[in-house]
Length: 89
Image (cartoon, rainbow, N blue to C red; front, top):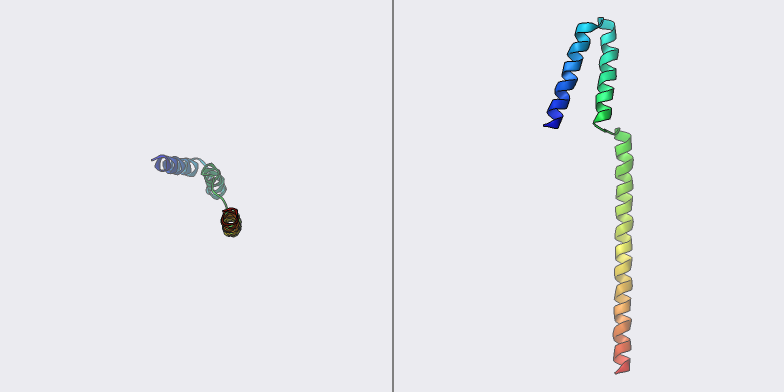
């Protein structure tokens, strides 16, 4: 619902600009209005999105590698604990 109100406000502002200014200023004013509207929506550029997606992918790969290594180390600890317990009996 909030987005509908937002776009209605933008539409109304565009209509006001069209009524009040000369045609040559219309494009410049609408561009400035839309730029401000998009800023309020906190949108990011495609380049920024791609960079963040790549960072997330790399982070996931590192996390998976670390999890695999941790599993290996835990397995070794369990094996060594079992050997020590067997030797102590």
